[in-house]
Each structure stands twice: as structure tokens, then as C-alpha cells.
Image (tube, rainbow, N blue to C red; front, top):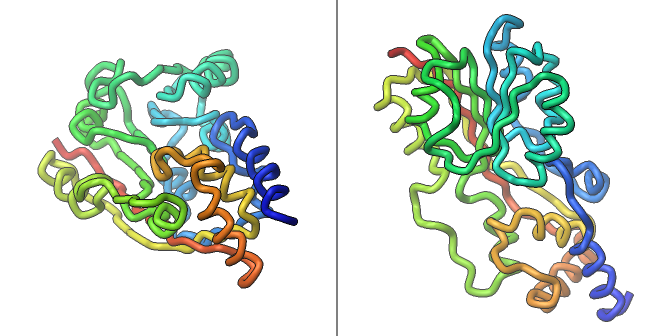
Length: 253
């Protein structure tokens, strides 16, 4: 496939729609190293059927529905308007409380509302988590660390620089939690690989994860995409390193 044909194909990938938070359409075109923990199993080990649950940043609700928690004891937040509207239709009709987030520091729930708050890859404010949890309540979060896909960002974007230290920094998050009176019940950090077997899948991914690839477009990054394509032809894939960390914290006071 010549460069002109590649550009046409990549632009089609760039324009593909994305709903919820589901990357299954490109799973067969990628390979992601397994994490050393199982977020879902950790959540399930703490979740009992009589607990008030909040799922922060629920996306399209796919993960939440897999937990099969009683709907009337379940609340979710979502900041992305298309996903919020999807959740209203998909989850709200089941009796789940769906709230649109406009400010991570001020969520629309009363003090001491929840027994357990879960958060996978969503922004949060530890002080607000502390306010919302009942005494003895549990916060479980799996986060994308600040070094996530640094290699891809450098590869695709000229003059790319990572955000200042302190953003999604594992050690600082732990320190803040303990200062607020949380007891850390479990913590872990890892750097798994992520591989793409064709550049079209990488284009689709980069367009969605716009905060890691600011101002990315096929037109703007064409030369870099061609270089990535050459790496795929040589090695069978192009690879980057992800950054993940896990915190399970209990509100003690």
C-alpha cells in the first residue's frame, strides 16, 4: 500500500465514531500486557449487595453492569456528555442514579453517601472522596499514571512534553490519602507494554485519547505515522509502555 492509500485508510480510522468506553473493535489489532492485579475481582471482593455504590466515570456502564449490583443502591457519574446521555438511556431507565460531572471537586451527592466508591481511569479529588464516603467506606481506584504511552506521544507529536510532575503521580496520591485520614489497604504500580499491529488502530486510539495526543491528526502527523508504519513492517508491531497504579483506601475518620 503506497503512502497515499495509507493516508486515505488512516483518515477513515480517524473519523470512526466512538461510543461508551469500549475499544473491542480494535482488540484483535492490539496486544496489551496483562496487569498483575484484577481490578474487577478486587472490586467484587469488597462489594456486598447491601452497600451504596458509586462508580465514577462509568463510561457507557459496561463494567458497572457486569458487577450486577442492585440498581437502587447504585449511582454513577460521567463527565463526557455523549456518554452521559447514553447512560441516561441505558442505566437511568434501570433505576440507577446518573449524574453529570461538571467539577471533580464538587459532586452532587450528600456527605457520607456511599459505602464504596470505585473509579477506573477517571479524575477525582481525594478530599471529595473523603466527604462522600461513610466512615469505614472503601475507595478503589485504578489509574493511568503520568508516564502512560510516553513513547507513542513522543513518536507521533513533535516537541511533545509531559505535564508537570504531580499529575497522576502514584506516590503523591498515596501521601495525600494518608494525610486525609485514609488507611491504604492495598497499593500497586506497573508498566505493561501496549502493541499495535497496524497504524490504523493506533490512529483510532490516538484520536480518542486526545489528552495524551494533543492536536493529533493524520494530516498533521503524517510523516510520523509513515515512520510507525515502517516499524510495523519491520517488527510486526509498534510498541509503547503503559503506566498503571492501584489504590484501595479505607476512610478511618
